[in-house]
Amino acid sequence: MNMRDRWRSTSENFLLPIGALLASLVIFGIFCAVQGKNPIAIYGTIYSSAFGNSFSWQGTLIRSAPLMLTCLCTALPAMLGLTVIGNEGALIVGGLGAISIGLSLASLPSLMVQIAMAMGGIIAGGLWIMFVGAIKYYRGVNETISSLLMNYIAIAVLNTLVEGPMRDPSTLNKPSSFPLSAVNMLQSIPNTRVHYGLIYGLVACAIAYFLIHRTTFGFSVRTVGGNIRAAKIAGLPVGKLTLIVSFLGGSCAGLAGMVEVAAIHGSANASLISGYGYSGILVAFIARQNPLVAVLVAVLMGGILASGSALQRSFGLPDATVLLFQGIVFLAILFSESLYGRFDFFKDREPEVKIDASATVV
Image 1 (cartoon, rainbow, N blue to C red):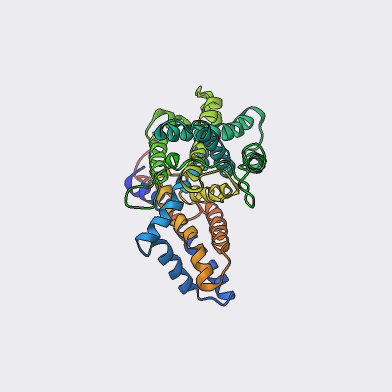
Image 2: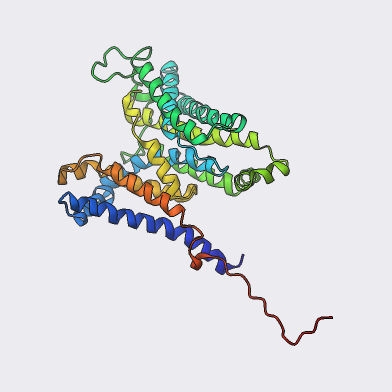
């Protein structure tokens, strides 16, 4: 592929998602206008609430951290051709695993407790999604349906534990587990209110990109995703790769659960069902499963989430308005997927073959 054709392919991957986002803005603006609100003023409020000043930026980055991690739960299995949407469930069980270990090891030094909590979240979330990959490969169960149903199972497990064995008797109106001690909480980056979960998200996305695009393991994964039959003929261990990649994707969402417990809530409760897992799916689709692009998309999506309360205060719109906006974006992105390869402008040009009319056939 020459440079011109490579530019065309890159342009398609960049321009179609941008076009989908612009279309989403138009549709959402029409919805706001029907409600009697000024769309331009609403977009201005979203921008100022998300990126208008240092305080706004910090609120955006706080919400971006779990999105960077949960999006990998969809992005990594997608390299194998799997559509996993169990991000929310993996986040929940990761949070449960983290709080269980954090409370059990509370007497140890804080650094050891935090490392153990991170490992607990990683293992719990990884095993949760690895089960989805296992039943897909060995039993042929559709991974999209099974991972979606696993979300509801995780929610049921959370409710059962925080209202039963793990419940702190002092929590009356909102059942919660026993809280972490302040010393074992994940601290904020100095001179900010942004916790170190943001660093976890950035490092995880960088490692995921390197693993998939710069290693032989990643080449094997992309080969399976491109043509599983050819991969089997070439002798690649498809089953093993499916389990490993599913575990890695789930472990990232599980780490997001640990971050939510150790940096935000301080305990396991219904607040873990925050929707970050579902938003992570949208981030992965907009970024086209590229972990580095996902960082930028996560910041954008975090800003939209941060503006929900401002829209409620300034315009009287429900706080769930941002969820409607996310839904419109998601539908637009899904529609844009059907447009790839449809425009001649983005297609590779076949080299012209000139035939010499004076040539003689022997």
